[in-house]
Image 1 (cartoon, rainbow, N blue to C red):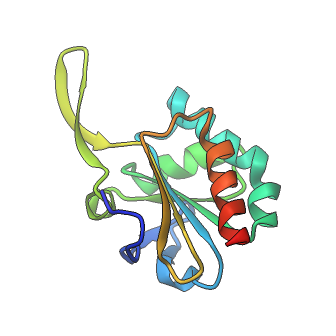
Image 2: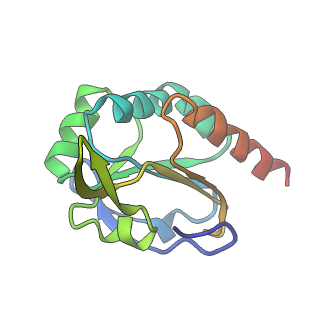
Image 3: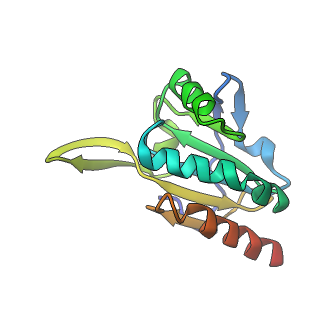
Length: 156
């Protein structure tokens, strides 16, 4: 997993509408990049709706939020629309960005092992440097932790 203090690897991925979003084009303000395992599952819905409901707080901190999953754009779009999300979701179907960030991991459920995206959040400063990493963040605690990190970043 990429570490605090490093420059976040740049990427370009399609958003829920199929438009390319390039991370480096968002420099100049803080960016929250969060990885989630699968669109429209309970934990991922809790996390996404939390960001949706706290978006004014993220905007007050000047932050752009990007949610990334290994889902195809069509599924990301369906999830985005169904939950009325007001921020950008990106589809990393070939999981190249998940791998770049070190969140593509072997998982296990009901005795079966498989590869998938680990839930993790990276807070970047205006220059694209990773200032905080939340590995395996819990969906219900996500916003509180990230907003606190953004507030600390603003105070620094």
